[in-house]
Length: 104
Image (cartoon, rainbow, N blue to C red; front, side, top):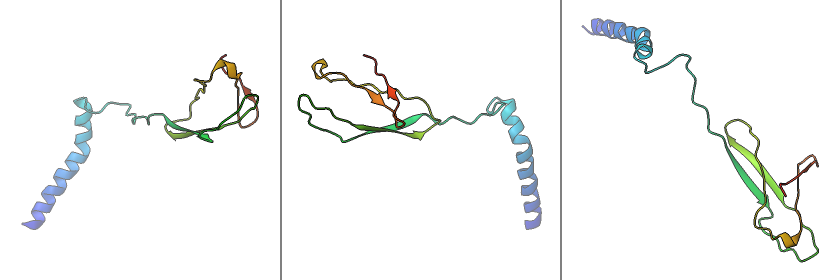
């Protein structure tokens, strides 16, 4: 009796393995070509130092790091806000020393 039950279960499992994917496509539960979900683009940004006091006439530098958390690499735009115009101008430069002009 146990051998017969195992045989029946094996036949049912094989039938499901062969026919279930076709039924899922037929009823539109799966579609072809099957494309996996894309990972959402996410990044982190950090500044060092987190704060600094600068007196009139001095200059200062901050290091900004942008790291990919998930998804594929994409461009990230940086800007500066909240700095009074009386303090002068600002600029960004990349790790290789090339100047990146801000929108003045």
